[in-house]
Image (cartoon, rainbow over all chains, first blue to last red; front, top):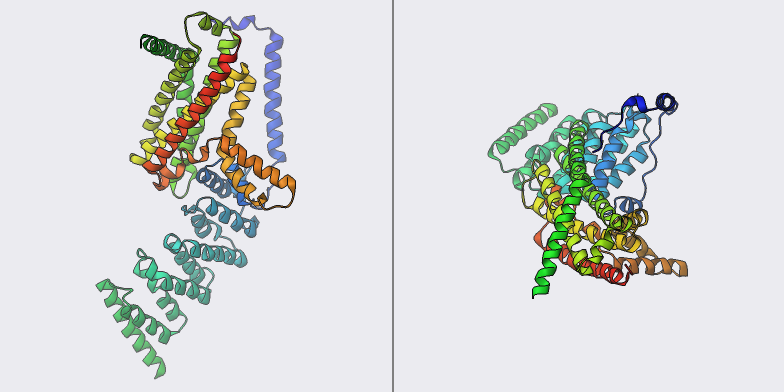
Amino acid sequence: MTKQRHFKNIPILVILLFLIGLMLQIIWQLNNFKKNSKYQPLPDAPSQNILNLQSFGDNIVLSRLLILWLQSHTSQNGLYLSNNDINYKYLTDWLNAILQQDSHTQYPLFLASYQYILVKHPQKQRQVLEFIHQQFYIDPKRRWRWLAQAAVIAKYRLQDLPLALKYAEILTAYAPIIPDMPDWAKEMQIFILEDMGELAQARLLIGGLLTNGLITDPDEVAFLNEKLQALEQAQSGLQE
Amino acid sequence: MNSVLKNVQQAYVLAQYTLIEAIHSRFFIILFVLIGLSIGLELFLQQVVLFEKNMTQLALVAAFLRISAVYLMGLFVVSSITQAFNQNTIYLFMALPLARSTYILGKLLGFSVLALVMCGLFSLLLLSYIDNIQLVLWLLSLYCELLLVISVAIFFSLSFHHTLPALTGFIGFYLLARSIHAIQLMSQGFQNSSQWSDLILYYISQCVALLLPDLSRFTRSEWLIYQTGHWEILAELSLQSVIYMLLIISASLFDFYRKNL
């Protein structure tokens, strides 16, 4: 490489112009930053055709980029927003679109269950739970744990025991086709029924789980037998 | 037999010159800068990603390396060949007892070696995430994709002689070849339309698809993160690469032999 000439060979005017240009650019950007510091709402999700075209044939990469973009939507230009500001209809459409691009990923369901559920708006919470519920049917073997999480949220966060029971019932119904579903998920229904005071139904369910061979672990069987006895005692106590 | 051996020797020398040219044009410096950027991306994602961290990092870093490889290889091929025309060094080669086909094959060999080095360096980076057969499939597929990129860039450079139109043609080809499957799927809806404009669009997309390799099937991220790749797919892609290289290199030779240099 040829050696460069000394700085003193540069005319002062050129240096001044460079410094003025640099200063103006920084001022311009700072001004723009302040001007743009307002919330940009979430747009409607595009169709799958548009997303397929934008992915240039690599849907997995597009889905990962979109999920990171969606995840960071609540922090824009130095503003940190609450989930309450988000339109949840559009949000669930985006999550659905991302899952359609990459049906193997669990990331959108994770965000729905752990980030977007943290909204102080029961209607929006229910929208998220309904989204998880619908997604479960698409791939029950991989998405059952999110429905179990939805049942827990419905029970403790929304205090909506019938909704929690509905999700727990679905889990128990699908248990035979989901080999890796743990026993606690199959048994969720029992505890929700107990909380609802439906002791007779809880007993019936335990009997069903023990007889149809869904629970095979000896410790778990012993636990359920104990639970059955406790429920019987509680029920007879109530009747007396 | 002797003439074949002589042609091979000449092609080998030209390939060596291409490698020297790559060193002089800072090819390897840019390659290492791109690898550095991918490490930066990896560290950034480490902080940002909340779930499926490894998978997301792997998918995005691999996609960055893929696009970097195509960008660097395509740009280098276009600049190398158009420079030969602009600086008139092509006339020097043509004045030598050198067949035009040997010139193209020598260049192709040199670029192919560069692509191989690039894939080797990328494999070292990706080994920190994945060390199974899927990485081998992904790298071999990337190599096939780069061979296609090289052949197409040679074709456009020989046809247009100037960097701007050659690069535009190359980028247009690459983006179209990666989207053609999605375009074809979108145009399926027009197949039974009663409007002639829809039918024209449908037939144009079908014809274009016949002339392009479907690059969306190459170098899939899902092989790396969901382990879905297998040797049959790679064999299919390799065969497609050989067929398309045969087509595009023969088209380049056809054009090159007709040039009055």
